[in-house]
Figure 1 (cartoon, helix red, strand yellow):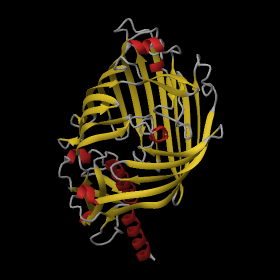
Figure 2 (cartoon, rainbow, N blue to C red; figure 1 turned 180 degrees about the vertical axis):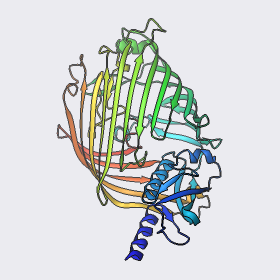
Figure 3 (spheres, rainbow, N blue to C red; figure 1 turned 120 degrees about the vertical axis):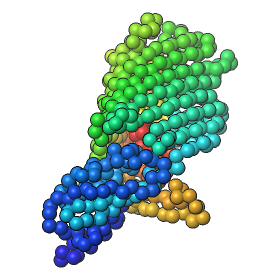
Figure 4 (tube, rainbow, N blue to C red; figure 1 turned 60 degrees about the horizontal axis):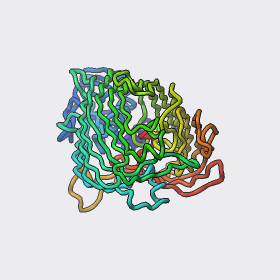
Amino acid sequence: MAKAIQILTISFLLGNGLVIAAQDSLMIASDRLVVHEIVIEGNRVTKEQIILRELLFGVGDTIRKMELLPVLQRSRENLLNLLLFNFVYFEVNHLPGNHIQVILRVTERWYIWPVPILEYADRNFSTFIKNRDWEKINYGAWLRWNNFRGRNELLTAKLRLGYIREYALAYSVPNLGKKQQHGISTGFNMNQQNEVFISTVYNQPVEYRPLDKPAQIRLNAFANYSYRRKLYATHSFRFEYLDYLVSDSVAIVNPNFLGEARTRLNYFRLSYDFVYDIRDSKIYPLEGFIVKLRAEKVGLGIIPAFPYPSLRFTTVLMFHQKLVNRLYFSNATKAHYSQEKVLPHVLNRGLGYHEFLSGYESYVMDGSDYFITKYILKFQLVKPTTYTLPLIGMEQFSKVHYAIYFNIFADAGFVNNDFPGPTNTMVNNWQYSTGAGIDFVTYYDQVFRVDFAINRYGEYGIFFHIETPFHRW
């Protein structure tokens, strides 16, 4: 019987990416194990200290035998959530005197992405497919250097042309200090558009392309400091400068676009964020939860002419739980509140831009405050599977993983607007929808989703999405 239990335990660990290889026996006399050595293999670029920072144990630590498997599993999830590795495996060798040697094998991703840009510029992929406006295509070049210098630093540079012209440069260092608890980032972004969503009529954005181009130029420069004392809680402060400049025609057609027929609106913003994240995956979580809290002050008095100073508060709660084998439940809820209710159109955006209700992809709901919640029941059609592609010699691309999920969902949301337009009837009313869909999850953080959804008005359709779920929340 004991032998059978041992075989079943090893089989379970093999299926979950953990391998425990005992030199003599898994059953040893003492209830406590001492970590004698940690050996890291496969990290050709990543520095060892970046990897060791995410482990729940270190050399010399004592671990109760019954806690060893959960500790290794959680450490594996922490490493995968760095988004630096495609695969992470543990192997444990038992040594004399209740000591263990932990061997950690990682498969690093491809970190340097100097790739061409060819993308749609609509609010979401389903809207682009519906409108089929081929002028809304962006092209250009994008450099994203993940794990720069092997220290999990991020260097990005972007040159985007086409429907939206964008020039951007940013640099992030997340692991400063002896204990790697501090992080800083800085960057700027400037984009130029010849067409803008100038207003909202009948709950849909109205596009306007003036003769005097460009329609809008937006500049954003920022500096960010973060503090992560332990593994899962992060505090950050962000100082930003934003500057909107629009053509005279935009200000004439909608004087409230920037407010009071302005052609320029610029201001500073200071925000504080707290994030507590213990999800098993940042890309497609199945278990765990995350809490995000944000407080921001818009308009700091540095530019006295800014007429809309206000405090804003945002809360995000996401919960994921395994119910039974292959069946999972999740809920994602977000609430946003603004102290200032009189806002220009460019700052008065609720649902339909970054957050949207399923079945409402064509609509937007403008307002100072909003609430959205999503309930999802997932069934795992295809378990996470690893496949080796033939004829590809590079390890970063030859070995891929994928999984497929069927889901049933229900969404609800509310946007508060104290001064709604007469045709925008979706605001100040509860909106809801339901439906079902298929998620295809694969490596390099790609999630392809096809949904059938129906909203409260009986409108239904099939919608396509290519994005990491809730990433923009």
